[in-house]
Length: 223
Ligand SMILES: NC(=O)c1ccc[n+]([C@@H]2O[C@H](COP(=O)([O-])OP(=O)(O)OC[C@H]3O[C@@H](n4cnc5c(N)ncnc54)[C@H](OP(=O)(O)O)[C@@H]3O)[C@@H](O)[C@H]2O)c1
View 1 (cartoon, rainbow, N blue to C red):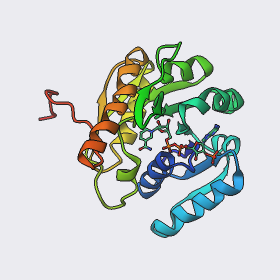
View 2 (cartoon, protein in one colour; view 1 turned 135 degrees about the vertical axis):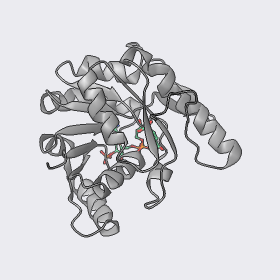
View 3 (tube, rainbow, N blue to C red; view 1 turned 90 degrees about the vertical axis):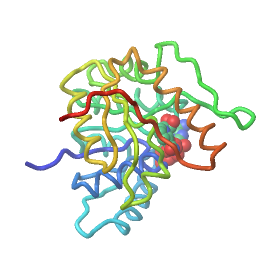
């Protein structure tokens, strides 16, 4: 069976490109989206050059990328989320929308959480996209780690969502990235602490001059 096509909204950024390269390597058709189609095609062309021959990577406008995809991945800064989703709402209808968006800003060099009226960036996205199934994932997965092909991405990926089938689909996708373990972290109501823990990782990374991730201990492993 062919693998689902993934569209990356804001896929020209570090996180979108990193995830896109890993999923393209895993055999998914990948669509890089941007506000500027030429910028997306440039990013796609750079990705293709770094991937094994035959990788199915294409770039275009965000709406075009979404229209061509089975599943969309939102990788824009939080400040851009509302305006981006309002424009793409129709094209995202009926689809799974994975969001890696962290409501975080840098003030005086420090990562700070942004308060979100809906509770979390993921809940805001779900409120903006009532006809889509929003799933939070990849908040703690560093773009710099993703950008190193051949190196496993060590750690856990906390996956949040209110639709069990969509969450299972995304957990299976996470498993396609070598080294990454999906962990069901509950419904979207639990998303905010997961999202803003990324600010703690930014601080830890700064202290240790490393790219860290998270690992949940105490889970029952498969026998
Ligand atoms: N970087 C990481 O390691 C990491 C890890 C986990 C989660 N995240 C989260 O993933 C998301 C993307 O991170 P990133 O580092 O890739 O961010 P980024 O490079 O700052 O932005 C990603 C893309 O979003 C688009 N964008 C920027 N401003 C926009 C605006 N005002 N309106 C619409 N689109 C806009 C741009 O694409 P175009 O200009 O081409 O449209 C940009 O290339 C963020 O929410 C971040 O918190 C990042």
